[in-house]
Image 1 (cartoon, helix red, strand yellow):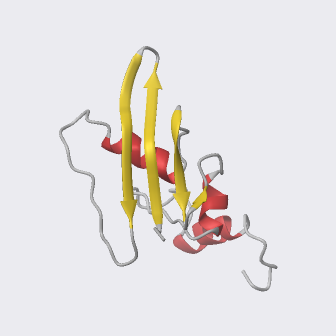
Image 2 (image 1 turned 90 degrees about the vertical axis):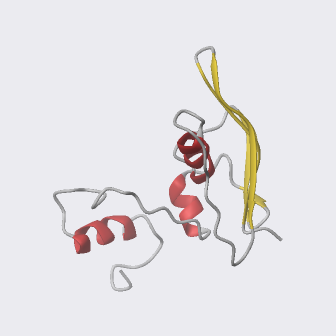
Length: 113
């Protein structure tokens, strides 16, 4: 069983096919990197995998369950995380307030948050 799998992801912007049937698989304990020159589609492939953008074709699986059409917050509830390069999600908020803002999207009670 794969932790994360993407099969034949395609992304098209206008008439330009920027990602052409990219597939990847990540198993427990593996560390995987996407390597290639600028403009090769690494960032777009990553963003499709985590749900920031929707692929035109292809499927993303998390624990062998299709998640392609799920928003990022639902993928997070299933265990898929993403840490941005930016210092914080909402730059004017403290780390604590950023975490509380994200926790408000969960099913936890106020006391659990």
